[in-house]
Amino acid sequence: QKYCILGTRHCSYLHQQIIELLSYALVLTGNHIFTSGSPGTNAAAIRGALRAERPDLLTVVLPQSLSKQPTESQELLEQVEDVIENARNDHLSLDVASRLCNSDLLSRADQLIGIAFHDSSTVIEATREAAALEKVVTVLYLD
Image (cartoon, rainbow, N blue to C red):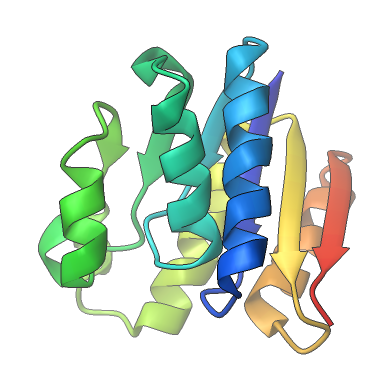
C-alpha cells in the first residue's frame, strides 16, 4: 500500500513519537510512505520511515525548493534519498504551495493518514480532497 501521512506542524513530543512509530511500522511491513518536509507531523513520519532502513519506501514531496524549508527540515531531508522539490512554487505563499503539494501527495497514495486539530484547515482540506478521490482516509485529531 501507499500511504500519505500529512498533519499539523504543531504537535507534542508524545504525538510525534506516536506518528514516528506508525510510520516505522508501516515501512517495516512493506508500505510506501509519502509525506512533505515540514516540522511536526511530517518530520515525525520521515524519522520513522528512516528508522525502518528502507529508503526505497519513503518519498518526500516539498511544496517549494529545499532552500525554502526550515533549517531543521533541511538537515532531516539530507538523509532522505527520494526528495521531490517544487521550485516552480517558490513565488507562491507557503499556504498555497502546501495545498498544491498536498494534492500532489494524494495523487501518489492509496490512503491518507491525517493528523490534525479540528481547526487545521489545510489538513482538513486534504482529507476532504482524499475522500472525494475515493481514497481511504484516517484522521487522528489531537484535540
